Each structure stands twice: as C-alpha cells, then as structure tokens.
Image: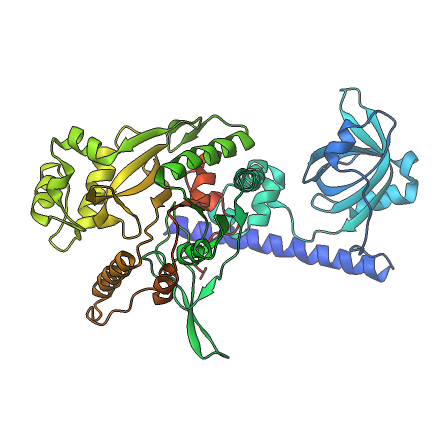
Amino acid sequence: MENQTQTKQAQEKTQSALEEIIKNKYQEVNALKESGFNPYPAHVEPKQNCATAKEMPVDSEVVVAGRLVQLRLMGKASFAHIKDSSGKIQIYVQRDSVGEEPYTFFKKHIAVGDFVLVSGHMFLTKTNEKTIKATKIELISKAVRPMPEKFHGLQDTEVRFRKRHLDLIANEEVKDIFVKRAKIISSIRRTLDEKGYLEVETPILTPDSGGAVARPFQTFHNALKMPLRLRIALELYHKRLIVGGFDRIYEIGHMFRNEGIDTTHNPEFTMMELYQAYGDVNTMADLFEEILGNAAKAVGVEKVMFHGQEINLVPPFKRLYIPQAWKETFGHDIHEVLDGRQFRREPLAALAKEQGISFSADDPDSKLFDELFETKLLVGFNCPVIALDYPTAVSPFSKTKPGDPELVERFEVFVCGSELGNAYSELNDPADQLQRLKDQAVAKAKAKGEDAENADILDGDYIEALESGMPPTGGMGIGIDRTIMLLTGQDSIREIIFFPTLKKQD
C-alpha cells in the first residue's frame, strides 16, 4: 500500500512539473506573438532534405528544415542536430555568422522539439562530420510540450500505441517498420500490375457483409432507412466483376470484423483479394510465392526472425498435401472422418481423443479438425508452408477435386502457425453455390440461437450473378498486416498498424 501511495505521489509530481513546463511554453509563445513575431509561419521553402544536404560537396549552399533533436548551447557558437523524414544532420550556429541579435534569439527561444529552417553552407568539422554552418536560422514551429525522454527512446507500449506521434519521434526503428510497410504494399501492387491485374474498388458499406463468416459492424443509413454493414470480405463483389468480363482483378483495402483483439487480430485490418479467370488453386500458389518473394526483396530481406524462429523467405515454399500428411501422421486415410460435405463425428472424435486433443461435446467438428491440423500436421514447419487439399466440410466456396467430392481445391499459407493467405479454385456452379450458402446461413443462425429454418442466405443477388456464367477462376486472399508482421519480424499486429484499436482509457 505504501509503495502504491509513493508511486501515485511520484506520478502527480511528474504531471505537475509537466503542466508547469507547458504553461511556461505557452507564455513564451504569447510573448513572441505580442512582440510581433509569428512562431507558426504559414509558408517556408527548404531546398534540400537532410540526407540530400549531407551528400552535397563542401561549401555548397543549402536550406534545410527539420525538428531540432539535439542542442549543445555554448557561448559564441553552438552545435545542434535537426531531423526530417530522410534522416538527421548536424548544424553549427555561430554568433558571428548569423548575427548577434539572431544568435541571442536562438539561444533564448529555440529548444529541442522546435522546427527550424536553417540556411548556410556545408563544411567538415574536425571529426570529419558533414555539417551545415548556419548563416540564418529561423523558428518555424514552436513545440510547447517536451519531447519524450529527450529522444532516448519511448518504451511504455501503452503510451507508444496511444500516442504514436511520440513513438515515431523517439524510436527510429518504429518509423522504419512503417516505411517497410509502404514498400511491401507497393511491391504487391507492382507484381500484380505487371502481370496484368486491374486494381478495383468495391463498397465498404454493404447491405450484406457476405463472403466470410464473421460478426460485422452494423450501422444505419437514415436517408435510405436501411441497415448497412461494414464489409468483412471482398469476395462476392469481386466475383461479380469476373462474371462481368474482367479477367484479372485485385483490391487492397480495409476489412472490419466485430470480434476479439489479440496479437494477430485488430477489428480494422488490411486485406488483399485477387481473382484470375482461367486460373486455379495451383495458379494461385505459384502467384503467392512470387508476391511474397518480391515483397521480401523490396525490403531487402531473405531471412527474418519471427516468433523466435529464423524464417527463409526465398521461394519455392514447402507444399503440404493434407491427405498425405494425415496418413503419414495418424496412420489413417482422411476419408475415414469425412462424409461428403460433413465430418463423421465418431471417428473424428476418436482420433482427436487418441491424439490428446481436449474438446467438449458441444464443440463443432470443424474445431476438432482445426486442432488436429494445427497442432499435429503443422508441427515442425516454421518457414512458409502451403497446405493444400482441404476437406469440403470446411471449405464452402471452393470447387471439389475431380473424382473426390470430399476434398476441395484450396490452400492456406502458414508461417509458425500463423495464417497468411487462403486460396481456392472458385466455385462457379450456381446450384452448388446456392446450397452451400444455405448451409452456411443455417450454421450461422444456429450459432446465434436463431431460427435455422428461415435463415436467409448471405447474398441472393450473388447467385443471380453467378447464373449468368463465371469462367473457371482462381481466387486468393492475403492478410496484408500479417504479411508485414512476417517481413518486418514483428510478433504483434499493433507494431505494424499506425493507430491500432485500443480500449478506451478511464
């Protein structure tokens, strides 16, 4: 109890000191304004960034803007560092070079955290460091709140995620992650554009969020007097475009699922889906290897540490055929636990029990299958593994394998047990698709405790579109956030989203 009291008192003291600093800074800003000086000018014109200036020859004239991140005030001359998005550069401010009055202003009113515009020329210090010798230094934005830990790092993860601007200021490696994120997404676009895919945009607000089974966010459109949902997937709109005559399309966009939050899930996340007419699951597997391989090259990595394991990102990747792995691991043919589009509960439960899988009588068959697959078949595979030939019972939107209706042409990609992507030879038989949508709607209704007899299918308009004819098509979805986690070696999705969803503070 005494320690808690001391901690609270220390926090109150720190907060009081912070409030006093901010108060004094505002007083300084007001005094500057009253004197006729504007500490927040509307327009400045830097000619170079920090990185460009450092590459310029000695004696070159430069004009650079940035945030002051280090300052060593001395008598008649001072050293400082300014930083912009390209990097950091040292500046040398001498009274005789800038003038006595500007130098006095610099020492009195410019501090770490402020933005400045520096004019001068490049020279080399005695330690051989490229430096700007200032002939003019101007205050262009006054910071009234002190910078985090004087730029020596911000470690509190709660503060880092809630106040990402401070995290980016204090931690250079965090900024580097988001630069890599942009490069990875650009690489994915470049790979697909070069292969003739067209980038498309489909609705975010939809009457039905179909294409996946997940709890949507719901809202209401006042003018139309109708409920709408935020999309949970792109699939059904994209297939309409294939029906309409586009042969290769993709979309990178935000999805929304009103479900749990953990290290790999955020309610708002980025997904990429693509569809290729006259392609199939094998076309998609080859394309996935190309997409991931190119993205790894774009950020200059061949191997990364992910979940404590070294991951080789150079294709080709391991292809795991589930029926074969099932036989090798359990000594049984996978068809022993399958019955058309359903599982055989008794042999599936017996196998799960034999393998030490804990489950209850209420657990669905799909959960037992997932446990067996993830804890037994995927063991020992850390580098990307493409798992193919899933049971029809867990794949409602995929074509069955020729001659084997209990298996489908589908794959999922896993790294260290984390799913990165999912792909199908797309189902294009409207009657079969209608029945599967009905089965899915009934299962969803039962899960919610609703009337399963009168369950509506997710998207009846989609069946109408499919009846117009869709060519054989390969489709794939890739989790962009998880892919970025892998390529940057991050174990938490919060590290690769600028502003992750967080619980509201008290």
